[in-house]
Image (tube, rainbow, N blue to C red):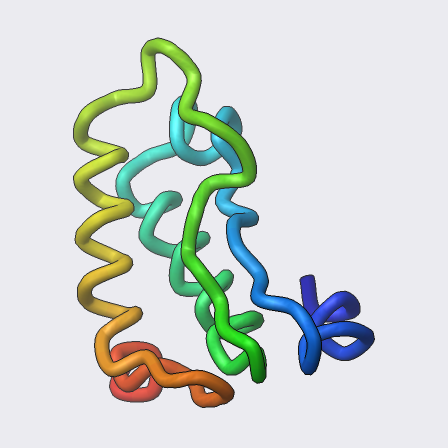
Length: 93
């Protein structure tokens, strides 16, 4: 994502990159939160924007607690998002 941001970030909005199986289905709550924070740190300041999302749809059996952790991380660390700037939630972490 960092390479793509450098190469085409001024022309494209990015989304995703939270692994649906390794993190969302099989990871812990802490794994989900840390990966969400990492994605926001790496792409949250993309000039055309960034949408925190999974890399694909969620597999059957994804724990509800991990979906709730994803929503928690998006709200807390994505707070104050603006195009081309890291979200306030990440900066204050």
